[in-house]
Length: 368
Image (cartoon, rainbow, N blue to C red; front, side, top):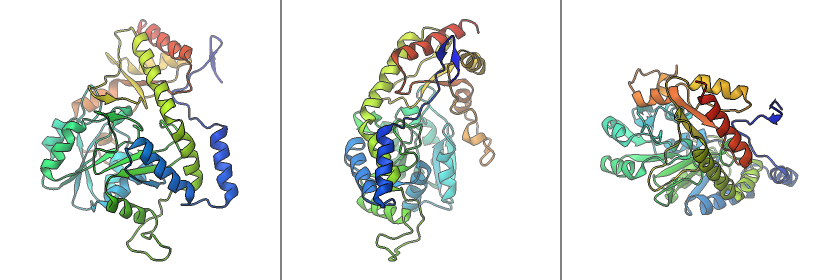
């Protein structure tokens, strides 16, 4: 491990894979029941009870699959448009294209980095079938505005909650506002399953359709009802996910405590600390600051010299990526892409390490 002045470097993210996760995986492997078995069913039930107020849960093999299968289950496809933020990971728009629909990119709220409801409203047209807000960095999107907007126009709301396990708005958890919510269990998420995803919904029929779609269109073996795919979660993944889920509340509070500490210790005017909207519960998948005056890349480089990891999510907005490249004018999205920097906030950090991060940022800022 690299060190700076004798102290270990601090990574931007640090996946947790401990003895409990390893033992759970080995237990399933020894059982011989490794695909779509009792661990998956238990994980679905526990996730519903602990994270989304008892909604139906359907486990799949990735967050991207969760988004794609949800759109398929809703009948969204060729000729349809889905309004999405451009300031997100490409999977948000990829899922729309994979079902044959077209993503339409909306600008973001500059404070929350989530999609701006006013921008969404301006884009609704005759081909619009759904809105896909992203709860970016662990902060909930403005569902209080987006939900009634969708209702007025008869649109589905599919929440991309891949970064927001346990986040909430006005005490209602993300994943329980729209017709469906989609979560990711990639290793660096707030909880993981090595890999995997989950769709949450209050609609029992939609949940059944999703279960068919993930399993070649069948509920009973060789009794195929619809055309489906193989996007199942393994029991190994589910077993690891159950261990992670049991520790999610504690890990989330650790992230939130780290964020509060960073808020207090970051004293430089060169960075703007994360905003939290009224009624929002931010779970800090990322602690993302803005670095003013075009100094973001220089600050990142100088932090690395001091052993402080950081990351930029996302340097290129989706609407500027080669597969999409729409030429849309999204000024707040472009400004965020040039200014944001995510600092370490993961739960494995000690309080002293969090203070090291803040001290380094304050020191570097004084040199810019």
